[in-house]
Length: 322
Ligand code: AHR
Image (cartoon, rainbow, N blue to C red; front, side, top):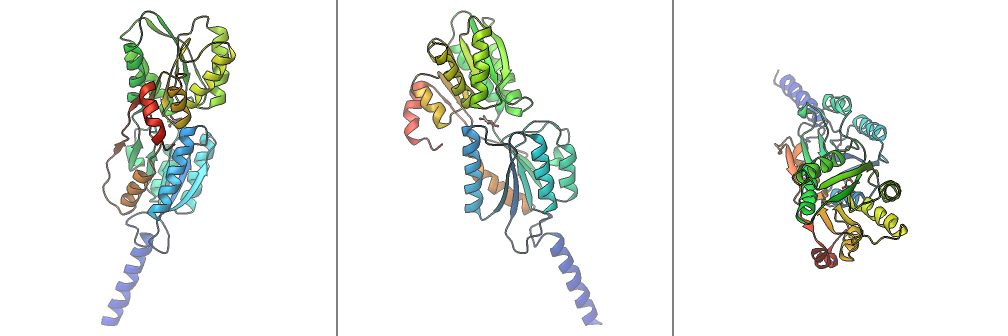
């Protein structure tokens, strides 16, 4: 009798451990040991920021002992959807991703939820009413970044200012929010007008191409507001090719503060940069461990960031890691 009870108990315990993915605390992962497997669906390799972000995630996974399955979506939502579905099939312990665009994620995230795989949003947010679809969101406050850019312009302009805006990828959280923040801050000064606004897809070539068109269609451009450094650097090339001096004839404000952007700022070709920190890897791995262990994590973790003037860029450049 006693032997039958013991055997039954052992069978129940074994089933419970298997359901928890080898003791990984409530996620569906099926690793046979305690190693956590993370499926990470990256946006792409569109900018210097993204390259630094990818490196941070890969290096941090390694030092945290997390097995990383990594995919690059080449800025296409359909590729990210495919990658997430394949991570669900592979029964990873946790999925993390930086959504290319804000909308269209509910169905795939429900599939992850049904498979009991926790999801972490990193860098970019999604637009969904169902916040139970992800455990936490780690990243910058993009509206605040746009506000910082607008505030600098308000404080540093005198008289009418015609602004052309190079937007990030259409539908992406940083493009939507950086536009919103900038407009909210500059509306206090009716002299500041956004005379043209178009997407350059967060790439250097996109920024150059759109700026070339702006220079042809807009007779009087005072300021370029670029949603990232790479598009600002592309705009610099277009401005020089048009025989004008970037930073002097046309002022430039960007977001990110990667090395190439900071170098152009220190050289006087950019006038102001709002920092967006790409080094999210260490925090992401900490959150992943907690989520897999079934521990509580904050719904939102905001990255700390600063801004740089030309003088501040000169001082910061020697120690800049990315
Ligand atoms: O989501 C972060 C943004 O995406 C960065 O500012 C930009 O450079 C990148 O492509």
